[in-house]
Image (tube, rainbow, N blue to C red; front, side, top):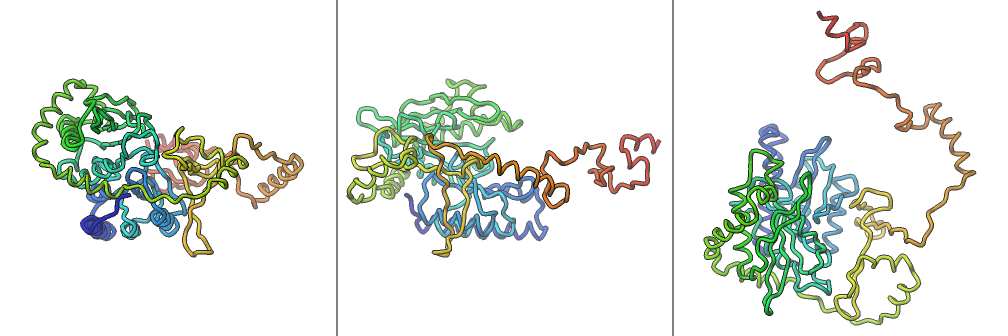
Length: 443
């Protein structure tokens, strides 16, 4: 995986220092929420109904063990002990305090991670196939290309205020495991006459108006990739609608103008931007590829693995989502279930490891298809039912939702509750006892 150089580390540290000062000004009241909103969105911080939410990027879905432990530390120290992995290879923390967010960003920088451009109308996290670099059917490793796009798009001066968010996906396999057709811009690695190139798709997306991406160019050589991608985003930046956020995505722009008109505009813009790169992107790409070399695999006997695979059905079931062929002879993939049974999808809990004094990741294995579900004891259930009802009557057992009284809006005063916008209620006043008579009483 890619490792930060001195420039990358200094860049992230400076961004965190600036955001820390902005958070202090927001807490002191020097910044209003409207003034603070564009600043926090540039650093992946959302304001939800009850708390802030921090979204952390996991570029092309690759993590090492140190980064996983640091994500667990963030969940335990500044959140409620868990985080949610998203479908686009991010992780979200839904309960951080605003004053703690700068410390969380500094902790992420220690393991070469950040939350830059995980929100707002910018180019978002670049995703890739989850088997990237290890799949047997891939033409080339898509991770160096994803890293090149990440560095190019981060703090790009022209693309910080796009009409809407812009999502990119890359895959090196003809089997589209990265769901590239559902992204704003998709790159599929292809090969033509022993040359590596990219099929470029635009205009895909889900949401309220799902669309499948259309091929704008079936083969872009490696040396033209970055200028071509910049041409696509530049054309959409000018054509995209800013009057209605529901029609601002590039899929709507492609649908309104047609793929042929968009292709002609992109080719015209590409002719202008191609000379500006002057080969600097190729030199950077060659340097990035050195970070993604395959490790020196250790040769070991396979008897223990084969025995466990034949004897343990749970261990055997973990490979049912793997590619059909291993990446090379003697190697295989391991796929684990990311969430606890019957929990929200994508949720992973973090717990402390008392033996090592550090947080660890807990995985709950999925029930194998052959294993029966746990059956309840009817006698035990018969004893629990009356005891639970007795505790509810005595007030010692918290009532469930189905036992709570239904309270409609116009009946809130009867239960001693306030209604928004009407101030305190006086039960002695007839108008406050029944809000429907408030207007008649005043008239």
